[in-house]
Image (cartoon, rainbow, N blue to C red; front, side):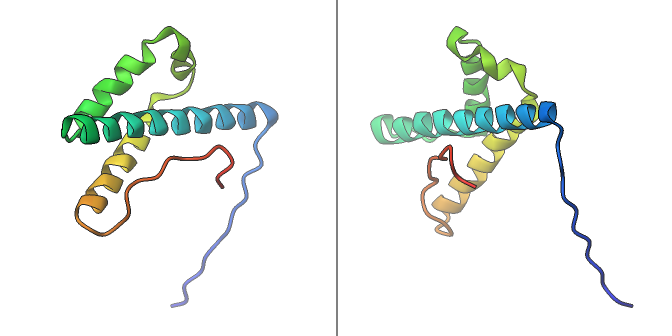
Amino acid sequence: MTKRAYQYRFYPTPEQAELLARTFGCVRSVYNRILRWRTDAFFKERQKVGYTQASARLTAIKKLPELAFLNEVCWVPLQQCLRHQQAAFKNFFEGRAKYPAFKKKRHR
């Protein structure tokens, strides 16, 4: 039996490309804000922040008037970035990875 692999390329419409760009921007913004909050909590108050506290913080962030654009995108990628961040911190504390880095706008 032979194994086969298929590659697919996604060509979004202009509307889809705009929605994807907005979603990726919101995910990056949330990731960086929560990472800054967790870093400050650890170094200033010696307090570890878990996923549930980060999720509650995301809910509070989404209610701020200057960050109302976070409500325009789907909530699933925003929650998923918190899960990825939690896994990054777990790997860091278990010695398998470096401290989680902030995400840049021009990162691939």
